[in-house]
Amino acid sequence: MDREQFDVICKKLDKIFAITAIQSIEAKNDKIYALKKFGLNSGEIAPLVGMSESGIRDNPGWKKR
Image 1: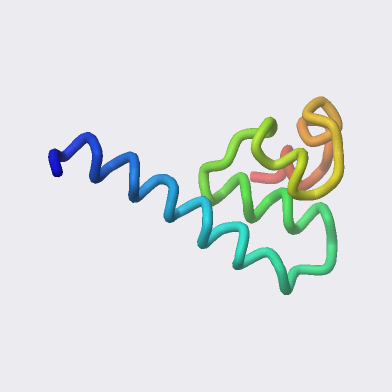
Image 2: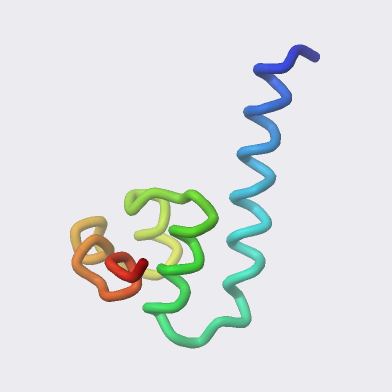
Protein backbone atom coordinates (compact mmCIF):
# COMPACT_ATOMS: atom_id res chain seq x y z
CA MET A 1 0.00 0.00 0.00
CA ASP A 2 1.39 3.39 -0.92
CA ARG A 3 1.04 6.66 0.94
CA GLU A 4 -1.79 7.95 -1.28
CA GLN A 5 -3.94 4.88 -0.63
CA PHE A 6 -3.22 5.16 3.08
CA ASP A 7 -4.35 8.80 3.13
CA VAL A 8 -7.61 7.92 1.31
CA ILE A 9 -8.35 5.16 3.82
CA CYS A 10 -7.62 7.48 6.76
CA LYS A 11 -9.98 10.15 5.42
CA LYS A 12 -12.75 7.59 5.03
CA LEU A 13 -12.18 6.31 8.56
CA ASP A 14 -12.28 9.88 9.88
CA LYS A 15 -15.72 10.30 8.29
CA ILE A 16 -16.96 7.08 9.87
CA PHE A 17 -15.73 8.23 13.30
CA ALA A 18 -17.41 11.62 12.79
CA ILE A 19 -20.74 10.04 11.90
CA THR A 20 -20.52 7.76 14.92
CA ALA A 21 -19.58 10.65 17.21
CA ILE A 22 -22.65 12.75 16.35
CA GLN A 23 -25.11 9.99 17.24
CA SER A 24 -25.30 11.24 20.83
CA ILE A 25 -25.70 14.92 19.88
CA GLU A 26 -29.31 16.11 20.04
CA ALA A 27 -29.24 19.58 18.47
CA LYS A 28 -28.99 19.70 14.68
CA ASN A 29 -26.86 22.86 14.81
CA ASP A 30 -24.34 21.10 17.05
CA LYS A 31 -24.26 18.06 14.75
CA ILE A 32 -23.55 20.28 11.76
CA TYR A 33 -20.81 22.13 13.63
CA ALA A 34 -19.16 18.88 14.76
CA LEU A 35 -19.28 17.32 11.30
CA LYS A 36 -17.82 20.48 9.78
CA LYS A 37 -14.97 20.37 12.29
CA PHE A 38 -14.35 16.74 11.31
CA GLY A 39 -13.80 17.98 7.76
CA LEU A 40 -17.05 17.03 6.04
CA ASN A 41 -18.44 19.44 3.48
CA SER A 42 -22.04 20.63 3.27
CA GLY A 43 -22.89 18.05 0.60
CA GLU A 44 -21.72 15.22 2.85
CA ILE A 45 -23.45 16.59 5.94
CA ALA A 46 -26.85 17.29 4.35
CA PRO A 47 -28.11 13.67 4.10
CA LEU A 48 -26.80 12.87 7.59
CA VAL A 49 -28.97 15.52 9.24
CA GLY A 50 -31.90 15.53 6.81
CA MET A 51 -31.38 18.95 5.27
CA SER A 52 -30.52 20.35 1.86
CA GLU A 53 -26.97 21.38 1.07
CA SER A 54 -27.95 25.05 0.91
CA GLY A 55 -29.83 24.65 4.20
CA ILE A 56 -26.62 23.41 5.80
CA ARG A 57 -24.68 26.47 4.64
CA ASP A 58 -27.42 28.76 6.02
CA ASN A 59 -27.48 26.98 9.38
CA PRO A 60 -25.93 28.67 12.46
CA GLY A 61 -23.95 25.48 13.14
CA TRP A 62 -22.20 25.83 9.77
CA LYS A 63 -21.47 29.53 10.29
CA LYS A 64 -20.15 28.99 13.82
CA ARG A 65 -16.39 29.37 14.15
